[in-house]
Length: 537
Image 1 (cartoon, rainbow, N blue to C red):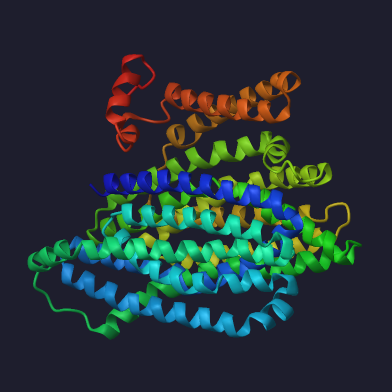
Image 2 (cartoon, one colour; image 1 turned 180 degrees about the vertical axis):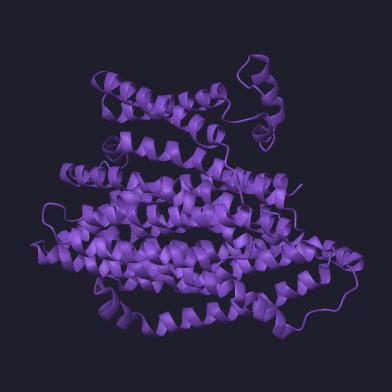
């Protein structure tokens, strides 16, 4: 039951995540072609600070809320679950108000002294409304995730991204004549518009469930309700370690921004050249690295309440099964994404960022190839972190990520200052961060869950499938490029690669009929595949 709920939740969020990333690609990629890598640089220099502020105000609380609500609902204490949500909502509201007002009042000093780029002022200012509304929306997402109902989260994410596109893209275009800083600010305001509309939508869904909540209150077991102070302590006990962990990467990214800007200028690059290189790294290459996270984050978000529920019921076999499934599904996502981006790095950049100069395309392609390796380990970090959070060990992934972050800072400073390596040093340091963190996380997951990973199903079959995919993709691109050109050859190679990988998974038995049951009309599709011998079980 718990495993089924987890997988269905992951499937819902995964489908939503794919759509969101497609919308995001339609936003970020044309945006780069309009405001150029320099404009993207202004846009991106604000992003680590925005991410950090959101991490402080939202990251730990949704997970804490979903975990505590899942535990209360597991023992049918629905009144207690609702009380937890109401108290946490107040915390979100206070956090959102505090951060948004602080940034509004301190925006000038932040861009001048912290970011070191005054052209980012409008981008930072445009994010103030998002800093208020994203925490509010996160409170409701945590509530629904605690019920293992991922639909409201998925819908709010979709509408948030859609309005980001609808508002941000036209604003960037309209403000382009006023200069790149204002155009970047207009693009950034799309995030605020999306947050406002997403919050309104999830509020509507919540209020439509008034009758359901009333019925659950009638069926709730009678038990002594926790005091408000005890609930706050429990929330903070979970939220603070997670918040610290979620803040580590944005903090290091913020420091990394300063390191990169400073070190590149020390080896002879101008401020404008440095901004363009940073735009290639974060605006071009990193944007594509973030795409596979749509699915891995979905797996992580579903794992926490599912494992928490199994943990509170002492269903240790369920925890092992969920852990096995989480790691297996994560690798099925991470491996093909990483290898596909590695093999087609420069062709993908040429396809998407066609208005960049040839030099910029080659630079971004090289950075994408390096960063592609991190996809495997980044997706694993997310799932392994969720498992540790679910079994009540939230500080372990925090410490492990902190160790990885220190490695990143040292490598970034050292490598970026070497002229022959320059901006590549920042990409290499990112890969190292997630290799270290995922390895350490896995050691502790193995220790506390006693999981026995199925070597053949979890590793061997996916590796065979992705190796076959990589060979076919490379041959396909090389063969068709001379006939139809690089752009069309890239699209053809991606399509063929996806088909080959899917068929390879079926032939090797890496995916099962149980996996298909999670999809709409999946049972019918599974029967057809079985009838032609492509699905073994």
